[in-house]
Length: 318
Image (cartoon, rainbow, N blue to C red):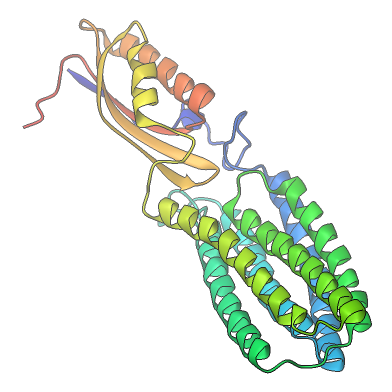
């Protein structure tokens, strides 16, 4: 005797919620999506203006640190634009061809941003090593002024994105860009001080290498998480054994097997499992048990897309 409780938790009441915000981490609301897009627009504008300023300053003051930070800002503008486009795609409703909607567009954007960061970091490191072998005079005061303006813009952008980030991999990637830029601006300021006070022109390429190291460290975590989602790995905050134990603790459940849980995005997870019910419950009793188990998965683990195959007896694995 087998019943399939195949509707996701937030469809069990007979109507769809689309992207309604779940109490503990479901898909983002339309309002949150709009706030994220506004924050991204502001960040694009600030970083676009800052890119022009830093490239001009780097050329005028012969500063590799400013040119490196400016080159990274260009990747930021591209990355932020990509993130903004992904947010618009993710807000699209589900269709017959995309039954989960376009939620994973943000994961693809995060992965693309990670690749952009790696390429930019390698280019900066190569030029910095060349500058260590062949030092170039740097105008320390000019570097400090331009990098200070960059730091202010970076901190404003990072603060805007941090307020709306949540668990979005897409916005997280954009935020990491801004944090790395802020650290890069600090490094450029320190190199400018070293040049101005001690004539230490080697400090400029060294600061660039420090920025590169920070970028690579931040990018590794982003790429790892993006690949984990795309390979439908178990979300980092969930443990199949813990979910199985919680389901088995229900008085109506005799056993749980064939449990699979995977991430649709970092803000949305899905689950399927075979659940053996005690005794021989009627269809209506099984429906009540299934609905209760779905509420448990949603409330305790934040899993709002679950498919449970309810069995009156153990299924034949053969």
